[in-house]
Length: 495
Image (cartoon, rainbow, N blue to C red; front, top):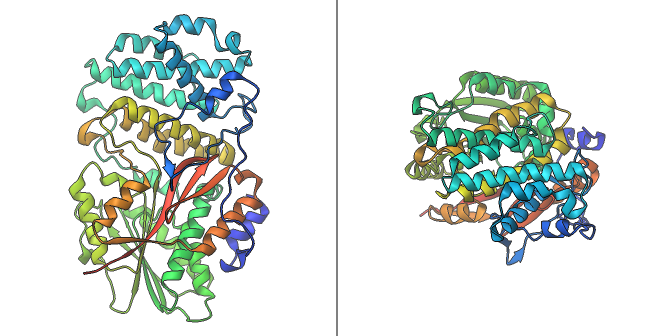
């Protein structure tokens, strides 16, 4: 962790970080694409999730990480180049294997290592097209070729091809009847077991999370947005639907402990989850932290998978001001619309003064297989580049992230259909329209927190590939211009 970054995180106050003359948003430099013809086509091969923000095309940049492939190409760019090449092959009615025999290297003068990763990306995407067309024998041949170079411990390209190829193979086995439903490794609504939940509590994991730019930015924005809404409250009740290890609340707790205008009588945090042991550990950690800063604190637990969540499960006091934090909890309900509507209805009945929402800026909620395959492939290409740049040295956390959480996402999106496909996501535009139906009104995020986020990016060379763009009143967080997550704040119109 950069020393300047550590100072920011551990500061007892948030507000001192603002700079009046700083710009809020950071846009990385445009890709200089004059070296190769294929490199020029990289910026033209738009992925399905590209869309306009506020009437203007969102900023795109494929300036890559320094990695085993090249100083010129990011993982996403390589996937785009392969997609463009596959389109050309299909347009010419050419055979994919014959075209590969010619090789990218001979066609464009690219370095051999770049050519190898482009071929690997091309094989994967060609196999997905074959699966979509039910040409399963041909797809298996292409996937067997992927096995020679793909690796879950290699470069970002090799790793992402490894996971996607494995998921495609599982889908093929299901289509051919080689895998019975009861033998599938995944289950509807599968949750990470308690052992993995407890792993997220380790100091090494907390440190690794703090090095991801989106975690840091979300902490600033969430803390300031809630503080703005509870400015004069003496008793505050924070309801967190995804507590994890609880480290996201240290900034808020520090700010409340030194608040001058109105001393805090009690901060209560209620955590909702399915692992009692993990929730208890989170409560112990937060209680210990509150004691060190002399903050009156109470921690409560609600055990629920959100299917039958009711208002009476929460222990609320009449004089409390309630705030809600909802991170990655809306999308899991998309497979069951009634549950989703019930969840937002329960939250509204709690009458919070603000609800902060954090979700993936991703659209996989489509029945068309190839569309969601392409969407997820390009999305995760940017995610893998971000992981490589920000926490490649945190091998344990990277292993947990890629081999458990990301693998579950890939496998379910590619192999499952119907309600078995619980990994469904929508972009901020969808959630904006959905929440409006229930009287939720989007409100401005803290202007101060946006300045703080900008300052954080400026101070750390490791984070300078993170991009921030406003979509209406929501903040889109991306990597090199590719949108990955959004965070927004909501208030309520009661009848």
